[in-house]
Image 1 (cartoon, rainbow, N blue to C red):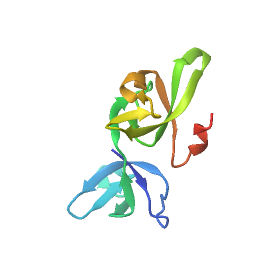
Image 2: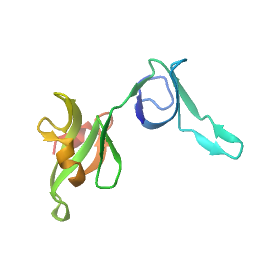
Image 3: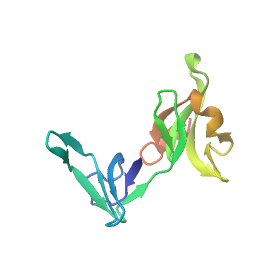
Length: 126
């Protein structure tokens, strides 16, 4: 599960990070954790209102990375010739799509995650 840190005063503001622990009762999330010989060491936490959970599309890209809403993917017609284009992954009309017209289930196997709209929006102007 991925999340985006939305609190501008947080150390990892604007970053997309992997969730380590989700505490629904206290509305707290732990990320950037490290495993130690004595158990799990907490590196960073965020509270309700400081993060946004990102939706997993249920599909992986060419490199077997999970594709989430907000990712920017490069869709290849011919990967060897880099014959492709960039699209934002969105949830559109009840389905995950790369752009408005490419159902992610039809293109994930010929796509590669190249960034996200939170940091790399310029990648969409290809």
